[in-house]
Amino acid sequence: GDGAPFALAGAVIRGGATEPEQRLARRAAQTLTRAAGVAVSTGSTSVSAGSTSVSAGSTSVSAGSTSVSAGSTSVSAGSTIELRLDPALATDRPTSDDRYVVEVTADGIVARAAAVPGLHLAVATIAQLVRPASGETPAHVPAVVVEDEPRYAWRGLSVDIARNFFGPESLQRVLDLASSYKLNRLHLHLTDDQGWRIDTPSRPLLTDISSKTAMNGNPGGFLTLDEYEELQVYAEDRGIVIVPEIDVPGHVNAATHAYGELMPDGRATDAYEGMEVGFSKLSIDLPATEPFLRDVFGDLAAATHGDYLHIGGDEVKQMQDGEFGRFVDLLERVVLDTGKKVAAWHEAAHAQVRPETLVQFWDTNHVQLEPLQRAAANGTRFIMSPGNHVYLDMKYTADYALGQDWAGLVELSDAYVWNPDEAVEGISGDSIVGVEAAVWTETLTTLDELNDMLMPRLPAVAEVAWTPQDAKDWDGFRERLVRHVPGWERDGVAFHRTPQVTWE
Ligand code: TNX
Image (cartoon, rainbow, N blue to C red; front, side):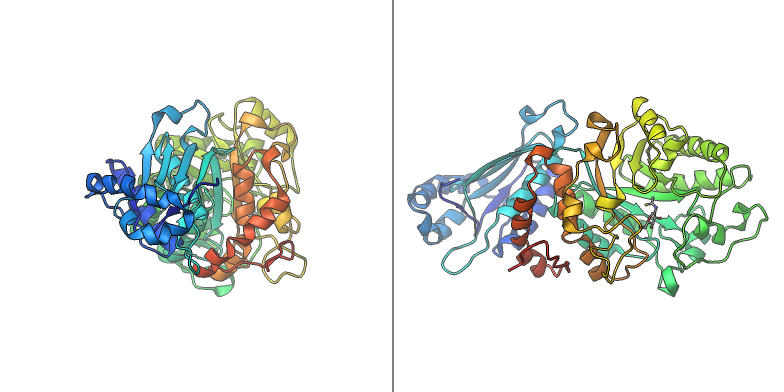
């Protein structure tokens, strides 16, 4: 827009009275304070007193954009950022909750959405619009009107904390990044051959024994239930739902190492700290198997706020189709009996899945179209995570020090230039609920390494999930990305300076 900007110094956030809205307002104050470098607060006390001086102040501010700083002391008393629920914005689309409007004038900012998630997204947009003080110009938000709604309702990032453990502090940093790019799901891959990363009270040996291991003798670890709870609250405060995964019936050596009863010979397997996949499995006809599944998914469901539990289901390379099919059916029943819904890697659809089960497509090397198309025709909906575009543990270039390359090299443009409607032939439109990036950690041990793989590819995937195909613009994206560097540097976020961007 070309109106006078909104001065941020001393701005006050006004939100609704409900608990989620108040949390949102507090969170917004922190986010905007950090982005602007000046205090933005939630001054719920002096709203009426302040509102008078806003109108008084607005005349002088609008008189000339250069005099914003002069006016800032009187304006600050009442200039407001209003976060308002507006049921009139609701639609019947699956993305209705995420729709929002932001209007910035010299007098104030008004953000509206039909639901709290939309207000979170509005705050992320305002934070991106913030211009911190520089020279004579005070911190401000340019005058603008934004009306926005995402392409997909599910915009995720999956993080493997099983191969190497990433604890609550690292995951909070990941959540900060994910929310700034308007993602709304963090999928945690909590178990694998190399380790068990979530406290599971009914099966204490899982953490007593199998949390201790990780790749290559690296230190292990696990999330306590208190840490898991705090992480979910931290995520919710940023508009993100956690989707926990216990990967079965393959990728289970951490389980069979802790509980020998899960093995046909009754003997616990050795710990595994290597990089192979597909060698471990549960056995459906062992009497210990179903009680084990009911215990671990029961514990997980009891601790989880979100609707979905992810059952894994990938790469079970040494099991007959018949047994695998019975496993998928059992796992769906086990999860549904906890009151949660089911998500699974797409191999589950090679067997039969219930139409309500969300299927996550990933393996672009071995696509079996027929079973996936059959599932879609039966009403199953897909999360698109094609390895050759969104596996952010793939190397950027052949000689890159970190990462793998089995799905190909994934440069920034590969993460950006693709269409979810074309990821699996014949599966498009309403059969797709969204897009999820994934970062597997066989080769990653520190937060800097993790961030280096995420950034800047994560914003590329976020834009795939948000922006309609015909509005995407690779050159525009590359240019806009550069303006995010000061924020990454301020927050100590490591990133890869891909030559596909002119970083200056
Ligand atoms: C495939 S993605 C896997 C993971 C590996 C990843 C490495 C998926 C469902 N299975 O077990 O960590 O490749 O890129």
